Image 1 (tube, rainbow, N blue to C red):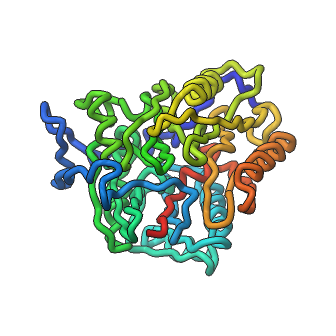
Image 2 (cartoon, rainbow, N blue to C red; image 1 turned 135 degrees about the vertical axis):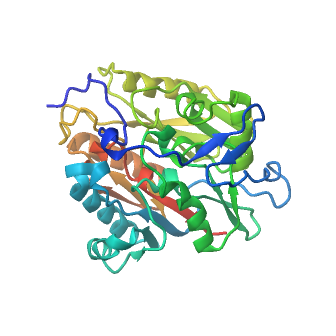
Length: 388
């Protein structure tokens, strides 16, 4: 069985050499703190301060959505023999979400027919926004609302998790989706990914330092400058930082696999078994400790729910790099789309916890083991477009 004490990477890939690297992404202007992008764009001006009239802010995922955005993977250079299983998982997630809200799947033109066949008629597949991979949470636009019917989008200048994976197409997905929707687009003042930043929709963010304060993403920015850029982009005023883990996976420990906001001053953290002592389990404990003693932007203590993780000796997968994250669920209109891993006791307990936290939503648990083996989950491959 899987040895849970072995290093457990959340890594997007275990075969990056085959994927190759590109130079797309951000090039920081030396000594200025400003940015100039590889395609010649300049970073746009910061939005109004949080709380200002008409200020745009990223809402929490639990708000009503217009649709969900996803991406169809078709690269055997990236996925190898795992590709068919990952495609099946992506199609299953898309079909499930489509029972509750519209889903738009971006696919390369040569893969549109296959994606449509796998996803079925309930999912809209478009071939006009090319993609490298399926991680729409990281490459896609982060939509913002202003509370007065306005919608815009920010781009986090995706650079392949610090130039670890080919991303020439994915680097342009955010701006192209925003153009497809017809909303204004702003390039944020930092390089990051959507899965690296959690928001409560009310001025508080949380993230790991390891993922964002990273020389391969933001080499010439201080923590204070990065924090200011995050807050400007998200319409926030406070960042709760976790230490995180560097060098063990391609994301450098995205927060959305462990800690999630539920609402104002409420959150959850996935917790390991008491007997688990690997670095990922200790990271979960550290995130819980920090969050349960933190206050939000309004000064309120944050109430934290423990979400028990699975027993890695019992789950179906024997992949030592498998990610068994119940916390990486996705909220869509009327439902919680979560994972199950074959640990029947833990799967049932996680479903019960999520049902208690979201009593007005249907909790759907899916077998997405191929995605888990590739280092991600359901939240990682979905990007919500909120109702303005």
